[in-house]
Image 1 (cartoon, rainbow, N blue to C red):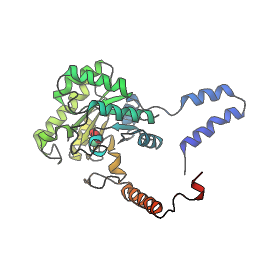
Image 2: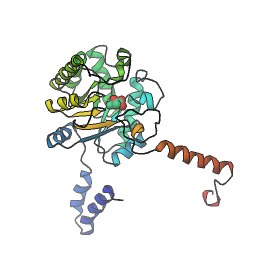
Image 3: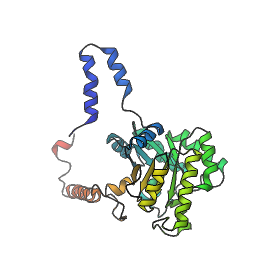
Image 4: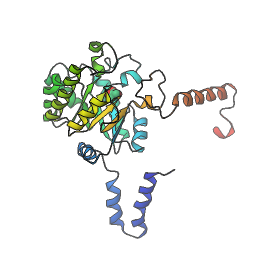
Length: 296
Ligand code: KIV
């Protein structure tokens, strides 16, 4: 299979073979181009779609980065997929920092965006900036994501004034699940759709570098993406936006219980893992593992 890293390493060796040591040193230093807010903005301008997935640990982060993903989101969906909570509300700032720092250690090229969890920024803008600074300082993430519109604009402005890039999140915002009461499609009614468009403009004006739109009608998401100059990344928001995000455990088919219409499964890791572990159990029970070559 084509391996870009192999190609890069091979190409980087050529000057050495020719005795041009200085040239290779500059080539080797460059490495893959790191994705920044500026790169994402250029991608939107060029019409190049942005690919974003979640990751919560070092090993998965390494894999998705190696595959060439643009943005790794350390989502507070870690509360669901990593910890088994029903909602995202219980995860703490300390726990999110742990996940984000693990991801940062595995990523070389992608931009790492970390969610600020429920309860770490809704109180007031002072609390928000303190949480944001802790997350950036202790995890090494490149940017933060916060859920909400008008009600958190002041917090976003304060976080930005501390030099921290912010991604917004509108539509279905899981941290407000108890207010919504259900995970169904948001902004189907005109009033809520108008508020969403207004909020998206407010976030852009406040300085957010991108916005996630979750589970809203495709036409509405497309309208927002067309009106804004910043990238709009959708999950269950159709194809008319500037990029897509999915929870990595869902798209790899590790998680079988969650099957919304918007989810495309690219693998059935559930079956693969259960099958492999089943084979291991069989081999241990039958004393087939370890064999002669697998011991000292
Ligand atoms: O926490 C998360 O995984 C998210 C995505 C669903 C956008 O916020």
